[in-house]
Length: 111
Image 1 (cartoon, rainbow, N blue to C red):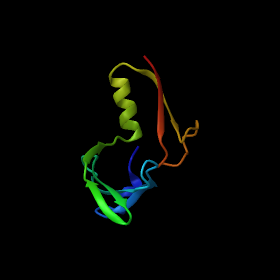
Image 2: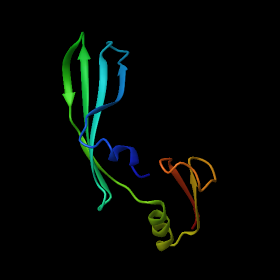
Image 3: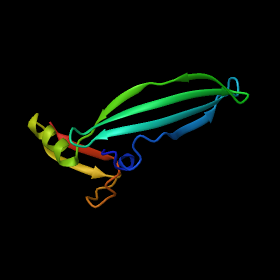
Image 4: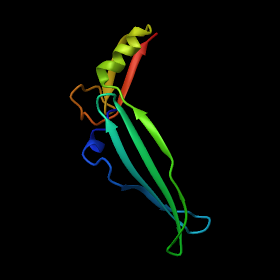
């Protein structure tokens, strides 16, 4: 998938997930900030994990990772270049080629 939504909010921290840990009632927040290199098709992602107990921050962790994305036609060509044939793609869990461009893709191919 291509991270289209993230392109407009780069370098901005936003809450991605939150919840309460059942074992001790601590509140867990996961924030995310991204920067995308559209030419290289690489997204740098910073995730800040925070644990709050009784309203106080008691733990924080800042892992980072990179995501490389491919456009649909590029991924299909890669599959074909290594010997897969009859490559087909389904968008948004349907057989439609007109599905939402932000939807996940499923590739089906024969080897």
